[in-house]
Length: 134
Image (tube, rainbow, N blue to C red; front, side, top):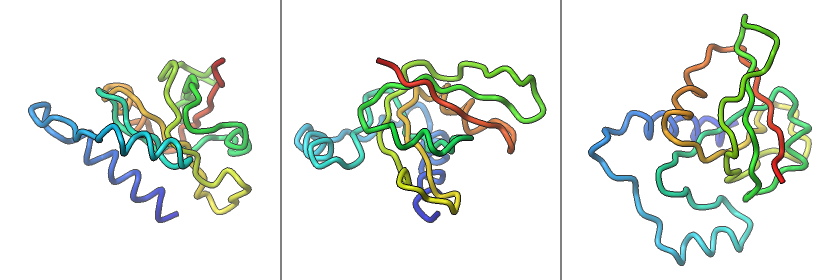
């Protein structure tokens, strides 16, 4: 639960960073070691990391860092038809995929800033789902 709170705080801080501030650069050696060790992947240029809680956490068991997914959303109180929020989003990390029942499971995605703002700005009760890309 603490990790999810930290990731949400990080996402909020990044989204409120002025446009004139360049994103931090990750040295190539650091990004290679992160992906080789199975940890969180480095953020691609022009993206921010956003934690997403899926309506069906069992879907996390088939996802791995490096996968591409289409992020879908059903806003709270809206139409029951899902809307495509972010096509081909990069999975950076999967948290709690092994049966976390306390609500701490999340998918950590790299999204362009505009898609990230839309994702975190949705009303409470909105439901997220993913479609795994080939």
